[in-house]
Image (cartoon, rainbow, N blue to C red):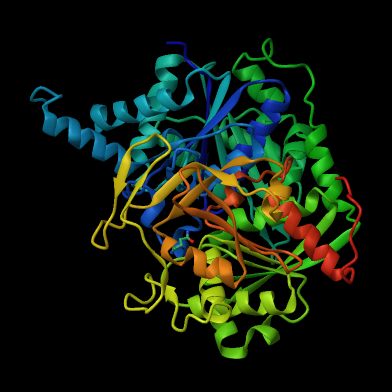
Length: 556
Ligand code: GLN
């Protein structure tokens, strides 16, 4: 087995410094130097995967092609790097322990006392190897903050890897905070010193420090940090707050980060001499110099916690980037729509997006949002629960099915237009079964599945393809018993699963732009490419703003 050079990314001082984005940006720069890069995340919590974690606490659950429910940092990875990740790239302590315990029960350890070292650490190392094999270089982010009890087994595992493989196969990059204390008028390096001391006490000497601060770090402070932490001065990198995350690859490159990393890992021979960051420059240029701007309302239930809709927000921005349009987001709590009415809450917006969600709180507000958008010709993009809300709206208000609902919200509804399907076939051909009593964890229709678009529909025109694949994460489905009734009432079914059994997309023919999909297209949107549905939606919002005039294609 060849050993892929690994860059371990840890964080210190406080959480939320943007470790995932820093790691992803460096990966983008290394990719721009012609290397094949992959990434993975090791999370210290005991949940087997983030699928059952509240978006309030942990932000969005990001779904990969293979249907793994992963940490939202994997979303950053896929947006920054041209790589398709899978469940292998998102490992939690829970997953590691689950595996080790299963082996122990099977008797694989032949009677040994099963311990954190070596059994847990060996399992961690195995997972790292499996996920990173076959690439020129891999970035491995360790969740949490150095000093947490939980992350110790992971830090121990990466310490061992460095000792076993040597410094040109494993590099430690540590992200810290250098706060500015206004009262003293000074940047403070002490927290960074302490955080590195903590790392060194467990045997890890960082090679590179990324020092996050509001202002660029003066040379005097860099020198001081280098001296106290035993990191070479040029490897103390200043990370300033930038207004646009897609500028970070350029900033890191300017600071010479890729050069340092490539030198340490002896990858200069393999990498291109110059980094081709032109695509990233184009992304930033389109954001900095827009020719148009629109306001999109996002009607959801976790709107105070914006990380809960990370990929949706990014995909909307990407849709704008492709046409040099700034997309302003207006976060709307769906219960506010219930209380104040959609017309009032959505006044002045150019389009509305209803994202995925679970449970009955706020669902009626989403149905009202759909109704309003439908009636006044406001561009509407419904995603997952947002499609289900639209179907309920059409059933109640166009097909006259009083009390129509999803059985998720009303088990006794007279018209279960959205219901739990109990059996279906996956992309791989295996039959999956569910019931109301199934566990919540891992019981959803998940991952990339193909669907066939109906000729002549808006969706077909937007995608420009007959068959597309999108990622899913839901339990409930359009109830086929209502297909004809709803079609007769004016709902167009624009996509179905390949076996024709599941409704994947719906739209309205006599509306400027009303499209809703059961899958989550936001997970496949990238700043460099954008996603057809989001690009189309933003264009429709621009057209509405321009008074319904058709806009000529604007290029990014
Ligand atoms: N709650 C709905 C379902 O489970 C929608 C899920 C979602 O929006 N991701 O089907």
